[in-house]
Image (cartoon, rainbow, N blue to C red):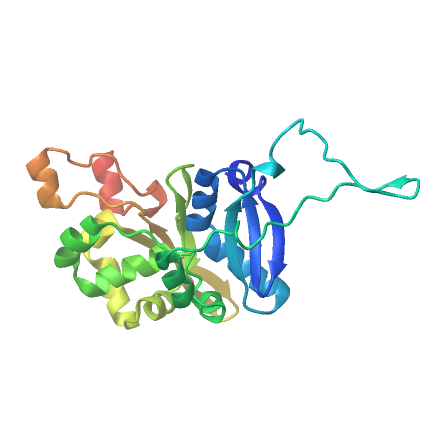
Amino acid sequence: MFETWVQPLRPINFENGIFVVGAYNPFARDWVANRLNSRITQVLNGIYSEPVRVQVVVINEFYKKNKTPRPVEASGDKEETPVEPVPTEEKIAIPNNRKMMLQRAYGSQRAQLIQPERGMFVTLYFFYSWLPLIGHSAYATILAARSLCYWNPMTGELRNVIETDMSELAQRAAVSVRTVKDVLSNELVKRHFLRYKVRRIMTPNGVRTAGISLQVRMDDPLTPQDQELSGLEETEPWCSPDFESEDEMDRDL
């Protein structure tokens, strides 16, 4: 992705708070403008310590291979290196209304706080089908647990076992610790979303609780009703054996 979209970009000009970046065709220009504009803007704001607006334009001259050299002016006996022309204002694409609205919505200071390029994917199925079954507290707790993990469906990279404690989950989900304990003991949540083990350590005063090891399911399973209606029952366990209860291990044997 970096070699395809970012590496070919060329800095063109920076004047009056506008940083102009050159792309090699309209498709690349639109891709970068739609997906990387906020990230590039955030980086440039940090570099220049002032609000910067990014414009992505098409500059084919930077990507033509085997170009015919342009004539250069001689100064005495020394030949000067040709300099690529800076695009005039007429060549700079004027941003459309939608981009202007996004720029107003995510000003430089807002973007640094909100970080709009960072987000967490939530399916409508989870919202419409699971929320009525598990309730708002469990819904918030599951999202809080997922925010501590990492999952990339495209590469398969998954980090869904974390060391935490119930108070941290409670703070992230904006619920009480008692509520988190109730959620973690909920059979639907245990079976489909969250499993935990208590971590204990030995101290001079005896054994002490040191938090929990939590395993989080990052994708959404079918609800029990949808499994029955579709005949697509989940037979494979989603959690590792370390997080299974004794009853489940006996059943598997």
